[in-house]
Length: 350
Length: 86
Image (cartoon, rainbow over all chains, first blue to last red; front, side, top):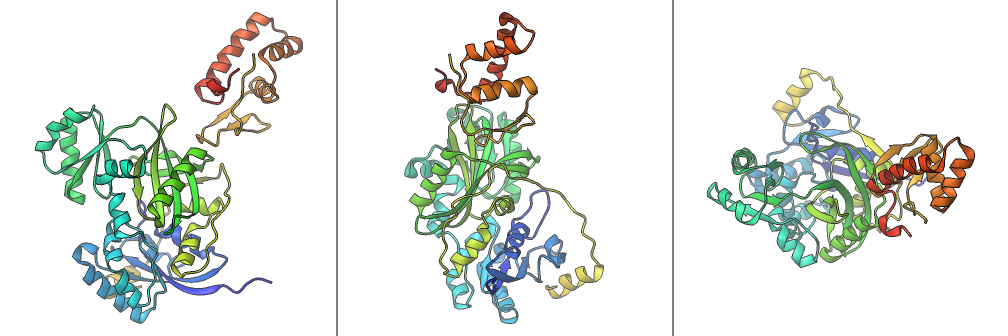
């Protein structure tokens, strides 16, 4: 006899799906396939053209919310308004750039009866791209040399500490390979206009990019972890196809990071395996990545486990997954009516 | 002399190879597949050479030339670990 599924209202952001897709849709797909939960999905969108708003088999109800840059209190006011109309049990933020606002508001959310399962502010700060060197030293993990720069004058000094080419990175997103100071200047302007300062200059490590999606319970335990190699990479550096791996070193590194940081919530480790077979940690993204559905397909429904943790349910760590499972992403033209767009644009909900 | 194939690689009957550590995959022809199967059975280079010169119309010198080329490729793709070579 099948167990009755638990009804739960889950709100999720990250409903965009460009060639730099948000993790919202794959997270929701995972939750819809849950064997424990019967979710009602409340989509939270920043822009009126985020496709999942109009995907009625993915999102049950969509609301527009203000950007966190307008202030955490403005965002919380809107969440509270939505919560009165459509009570939210668990909220899953899926963007790096909004995490700070949601983490800062954890108590406000708790008072509203909304549960989250997010890293702590300290954890978010520790793994920040600009602090990667310090992070490497603190946790004894191999990382590429990096520095933060704030203006054009610092660009000339790069030569003192780095050999070209170098990676030029934004504090939240975007990364470009620059072969000379002119290119650094160009990417500095491009990235800072979009994401602000500082800009991070990082040693370029030649090798293969590999990633791990993982979930920590906040007490040092790894609830699940699936390593992947990107097989097809877009010009934005995003995986358009990937395959699950079996690599002991990648697991050891994941357990070490989650164990020593006591990481709480979903994460993505971006690693480079050098030609000498050494693993360098390039970045820790403090949320579930857009390719998480590969982990679900390989046997670890990490979004479901995250909701269990958020609800305080007992969550047993996954012990296995299928190696050699692949994902191939595709785009899809969704047809909708102007009326739907109008409704969202004028009423802020659909 | 013995060459050690990386333990966890998956070899299908069709000659498709998957290395789960790197995510690389390769396609082998029948001869390549036969060599890999013999390596997996822990056969020495001498045993593999005798196997091929017995089964096919090829002399030892010609076989070894192609064989070491192929082994070089396996090493390049890290399907044989240098340190596992005896």
